[in-house]
Amino acid sequence: MFEFLQKAGPLIYPLALCSIVATTIAIERILALRRSRVLPREIIEVVEAVRPNRELDLAIEVCRRNPGVFSDVILVGLEYAHEPWEIMRDMLVDMGRQKTAVLERHLVWLQTIAQAAPLLGLLGTVLGMIKMFASISLSGLGDPQALSGGISEAIVTTAIGLGIGIPSLITYNVLASKSETLVAEIEAYAGHLVAQLRLNHPASPAAASMTSSATSSREVDR
Image 1 (spheres, rainbow, N blue to C red):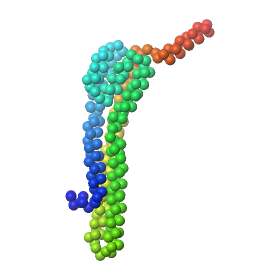
Image 2 (cartoon, rainbow, N blue to C red):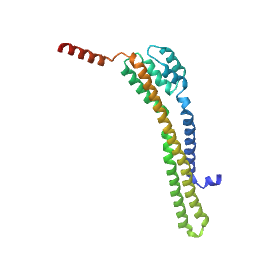
Image 3 (cartoon, rainbow, N blue to C red):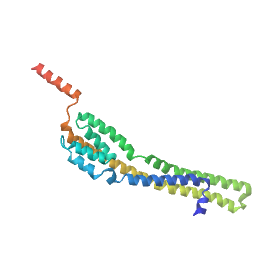
Image 4 (cartoon, rainbow, N blue to C red):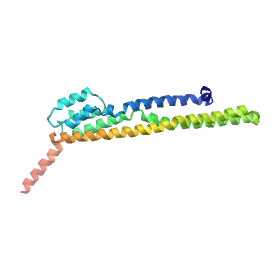
């Protein structure tokens, strides 16, 4: 195995680094994006049970005891439950954007490695071919060992680059899809929370002003 890797030439080092980084990111994201970790049952029960003016303090305490992407989003909604619902909605949207970035953290590096590793392999192929033709120009076709060395370097680096890039691309797509699914679920629960609490929210000043103006206009018409 060591001799096989040696045939890849100097590009084995950046390729090895890509492999280590991709594996580390994949393991970390697989563990971080587990549904039970992102959407703990305790917080789901809070969202399903919450009602206006009923045990909001207890629900807030449960969210604070279980910090995480989902609980942080729901906590914002609960903390702004007594504000106009438009304000609560905007705060939920802002927090949701922040936590979406948390769920997608490091995935861009995995995508970059999936694209870069095959290119590094291709670069190794080009360097191997250059080495082979340089050997031919110096000694002609009479040195098969030198000729095979260049061919080996060209083939091995391509194989290693593809061996890193293909699994990285598949893993990236799976994790990106998982992240999008979790974001959609969080948005659904946040929407449910807004619907549950909206009746308790006072109208915003702008809405109240528009309602007052409309009422005054109708009275004048009469």
